[in-house]
Image 1 (cartoon, rainbow, N blue to C red):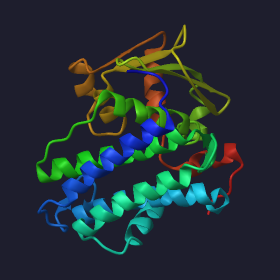
Image 2: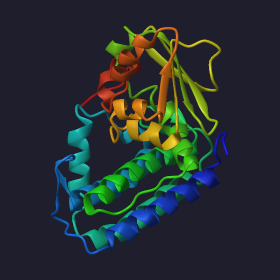
Image 3: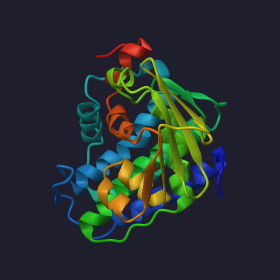
Amino acid sequence: MSGEPTFEEACGALRSRAELVATSLRGRHASDQWIPELSWTLGELAAHMVSVPRIYRSVIDNPMSFVIPDSMAVFGQAELEAIGTFDLRELADLLVEGVDALIDALAPHADPVTFYTTAMPRYGVLGIALNELSMHHRDFAVAVGESFAMSDRDVALTMYGMMPASEVFCDYNVAKKCSGTFHIGLRSGDHWTIEVADGRVDVSTGRPPKADVRIVGAPLGMVLTSFGRMHPVRAFLTGQVLVWGRRPWKLWWLQQLFVEELSLNAEAQGAPVR
């Protein structure tokens, strides 16, 4: 199955992932177990997952309340600590409640909604939340020795959120240097075009007739590589991700372009930073 999701489909996928995460959290795991790759304990990781739908809900409820922080990492750490508990079983219940509350907050709105500093359909917001919970569920599963699975369709749902968001989660100074046309595709059938010009990033669905770089791969391999859970060399050597195009060296610039720090694109948006 490919194509843009519905709000209802995205709701179901996010609720299902939240229940899977909650099941993992309710296992007999020590909340103070350290995860070296993240520099968090299991409890901190779980609290971060709980904070995600809460942050998103607050942005949806009052878009004008969000001011771009100097550091999204510092902002995120403060939000997870504000949850007030690192007890995994308590956090399991809070996560399910938080996802339900986010969906309830989105339900009465018409598309698009304001999310951080951009406008996107409601399924896009849920797709971004699904990506956060899925990647961190994998982190948790790896740390405690559990299995992890993610369907091709769930990957596509995350991409329908993450791709539009990349228009603002980018480095303006890099965007001024790496003009070009880029093709991102999933073997399940979903494709996007990224156009970079004059410091702006524009994303649309569909594959471009010509591209400087084309990146197409197996859905799970694509998302794990994109979010640092699989080394690109492994993805390339195993055929999970293929890269080609007229100017393949521009892949390096593309890898520098997308960042977590909204402040690196604030100049282009004319948005305040605190």
